[in-house]
Image 1: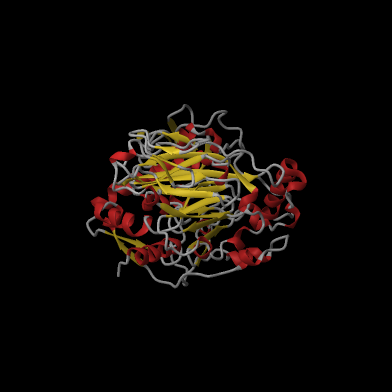
Image 2: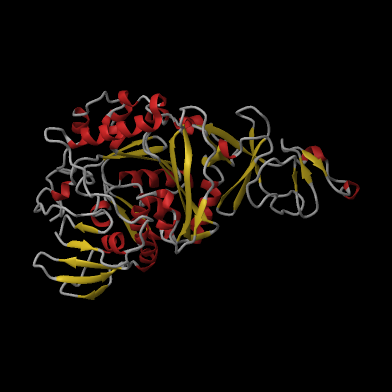
Length: 517
């Protein structure tokens, strides 16, 4: 039985603040900081996830006015390099105009003559910005250079035909743009964020992986799946033995929120469960006992899962969780996908669960393993001996309004979520992994984006490692959520007071930006 009522408004699992007291290294102020959202459930209309009118409102009052993470400055390292950033039907051209760190401008990516896109994709070394339709041309600084047959435009003054600019700001090596030239500064929008990256600043990391894919759901549906640990108990059975989900800490700070899911502790949902344990020959991707049911899931051949129940009965399901034969008629579809679905190259050498030496707390042991790995990989470039255990092992995931999700200092993950053009039923989901620069300073070139087709499994991007399997579980839900939102009778979504407080915070900010009462 999973944890339900506890007699309080929190999980009965160990509080994150108590875990920090057991840390073997000094814990920074940012990690200790607590700023929970005021309690209460939030209800939003289901239509905000599929209405074209609501999408248009977002374009008008959000995407046209808000700071948004557009690219990395290393993607435009030289003068004349440019990056095309698109959000909904809006398109911007981000250009390196000079040799200084702030010599970056962002223009509306459209010719002022007949509206053709100036560039369809990112590129290098442009001397100017010439439209491929009629040849109208602008200098890199946005000033107009020439008009073919200028004599035929007697009412046009070139001084008045500079490319319209968006505001540009930089943080941690990332380039942000805001189409609203009267907007607050980026520093103000990101106020307080720096403190959460003190152990390892973002500018000391480089983009080692970038994978993108269109998901058949609204961009908000997509990002909300990655803003809480409430779904872990039903979606990620392989995590709940060593990850605190219901006792995740949630806090909100201005324009961003934070969740911290502790590693090295069991889910509170297991507190009153029989301890089934894993078989000695368990493997992460091919043989795993479900911690809640005790059923053993095993791959005998790709695409199928053999499930042995507590009575020794054997049932067979497809990798999609569909019954084939046997006494069990229901199975965990996410664990079926994990075991029987598409697999990473090299299959499965990974043991399920590291065991700490007797007398050593598991969290401390996991942190020391990570310190050892980082020392071997980076040497003196990283001072891992002054870093808290929690910074090294816990899932620390921040969400910066409206759509950028950087994970904490020693976590590599960064997410970005965008609407796919003007289709409210599709999102562009991008996964970027930022890792420490080898020498701590000079960043290697950023990885190019690897686009997957909408129906591709995440294992088609092996550079994601075992995270690919986690993302496959997550995105298995999302198209079904999008369809279900339209099928609902009550046409509303209700968010948990605490476990979904990051989502509540997001919708509070969204209503403010969209000027909705």
